[in-house]
Image (cartoon, rainbow, N blue to C red; front, side, top):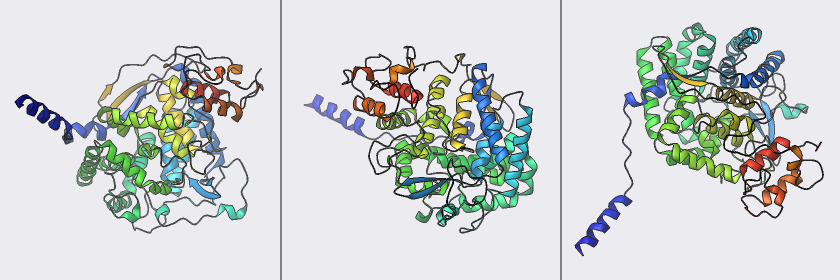
Length: 486
């Protein structure tokens, strides 16, 4: 009896939730002060860097761009990239990974960035309802492949949608880091700091992002960026305050489940980013958890809560195996007939920054742009794939000291198969599952019906002959989509 009591006591103890010890400021410090620097990029990424240069030059030639308009469901219009900081961040990151000898594009992009941040500053708007930092949807070169009726160009933002997001400070720091333009920060410091004081701790439900930097992973970057901006201008009090807020955010982020639930419950917050809270996967998937990831936060998640994050990512991938396909059909439910980029892009970045998937994995999931010019998500995914071909180092922005991870040996070309598969890539016609010599939705439907089957109804569904119809088969079909058999 005594032995039984002891056993029951042990079981009861093990059943208690484990208390996660808070991280000290010293433990969190690397995720605030160390920036990612990728060196020794393999020549195997040259074609991707050339594609990046092409996309950047198209934006430069187009001039200032209007936000992208897409129809989400039942005629509901949403806009992407209408915060002034969105293009600043994406292009600042792109500037670092253009072809090494493409000095003309680097110079042109630097000038373009300086023009955009001067004419459309993301740091204005210190009052709650100041509608300054957003980009007018009817001004600028259109990004859509199709023409719009004049009435469709107009969109009256709600008060929530016109407000600057806390990630703005990371966007501004990224600009200063990429261009070396410290003077812009100095000249506009009072406005930047005033905006920070407004956004740092807002906590009303009306904002849909209560908690400033401390309630969602994507928001932590705001205080990381502000600490670095304050360091640039030698403002110790703001630096320490922002670093403290970032530390609190990271500690809160040790509870992955809470951050995941917060992102889902407050998914209408992503309207502020031009998002779609009516995404067909909103109730089944948690892609919003990984919205607005930056390398430092991705590194933290991978270090401290990787298992929970990976389980979440895998669940999402299982729900939508074609998550990375541009405008993939939305077959998991809801009334929308395709998946918005607010599903695919966060998952791509999560695979890159948290799971640290290799270059071949990312390359095979790099799809086509959603917009004819200025697809910022495509550009960010390009940059992430290029970086996967190099050696990651973490450089302390205060001292310049670098800690480099072991080099990755990725010398394969664009035709390589993923590292997770030992089979060779089948010929194009292997993906023609209904023998009509064209890869389309009919083949996709066949594959969907046989998904996760080891004995599929259509034996050809196991495209890679691995013995199971899985994500690799969807990947192979996606690469051949809308192609004819030779």
